[in-house]
Figure 1 (cartoon, rainbow, N blue to C red):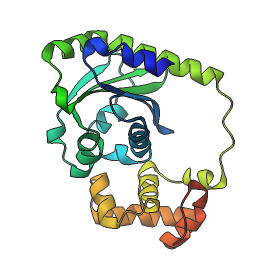
Figure 2: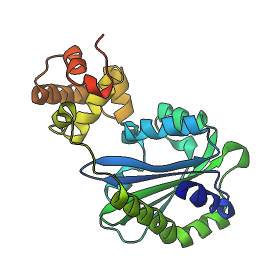
Figure 3: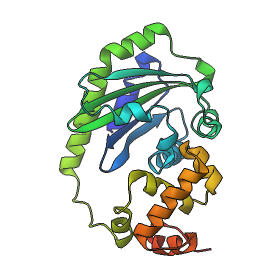
Figure 4: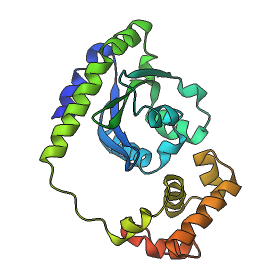
Length: 234
């Protein structure tokens, strides 16, 4: 019920959709809530795409990764029209019909919390008064999310031990893992380069390092090795 009450409480801010993530350097992104004007199925798919690797194209990623020691939340306006990646803009803004975004980034309880508030494209952009109100209550918004996250973690069942495939992925650096997961998703070398905003040569370097660590020689062997993640060979 937390997500429903949290999002309904944002009505005064004229936010049509809200998405909240938790980020820790050792285990990446986790989605805590996604609710509002976007169809529930699409919202779930977008959250999975983001946490599964598309976060690498988020222009806010450097701010998120560098917010571990900041006590005060940072408010980041976001103009979708100025996003460098056309694929990122299409997937996360044009297809769900979102026209504006205001992000709140802050550190609590050893994690970085990343709250994104969106306006539907038919409702225009956030007004200056609405941005000011969000800025004033940003600590309260992040505290509510962090407290709920902490409570949920304390009542959750212990996680299952990592599978063999997960243990193998733990051998990789974050960027090597990103490249492998994008290979598993069917993306080409050039597409991965565009997605991660790096050169094809750098993609090949990360792929070679990852293959060496995993003991595989090509993508087919990678698919067989990591098939518990849902990949199929061929």
